[in-house]
Amino acid sequence: MENKESAGAPLLLLLLHGRSGSGYDNTAQLSSPALPSLLEYVKRHRIKCIILLPQCPPEQDWLSSGALDTAVQLAQKMSKRYNINKQNCCISGVSMGGRAAYEAMLRQPRVFGKCLVVAGSAHGNKIQQAKGNFYIVHGEYDRTIPLDRALQTEQALRSNPRNNVKLRILPQMQHIDSCLSGYDTAAWKWAFSPTNRKKRREEK
Image (tube, rainbow, N blue to C red; front, side, top):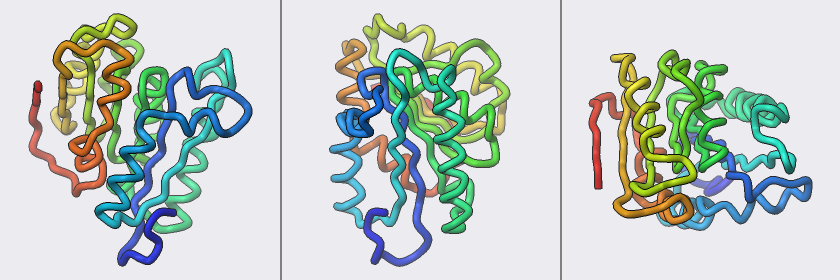
């Protein structure tokens, strides 16, 4: 837990890495491009939070390996232990982890109130059934996961009027660039701020 001495109940963040963080060593996921900016942000703002960084087995993905279910169960256990309500629980994923984050919002709608996805997209239109607050960050020239797929995910999420969906397009950035740059102060401010139910779309 970060900043244990800060007042109030903690927030919870479950962070799902991309394919490069896979393994059995429980250390490769620490190279996630999200981690340096995340730690700097929570320390600077003295945010009391629980950060979970599970690892997906190599040559598999979060869904097929069952690692996503295990990770969500851990988040659920910690939220109950520290009495953290849904709106203060955020799941985030980059690239491969982004698809898993969307899937978690579908499978466990009572666990997470927020979902932050960088350079990822949902699989199919089933994502329109998801409910919550979504922040999508994607590179304009991403060829690994084309921007069109992120836009399709955004549109599907917006088909539910109760969802709060924010889209941020990173100009001229390809996949790796957006993975490295997407987790910035603006993204963390959204993740750790009170829920804003006013729907908006931002393209920068």
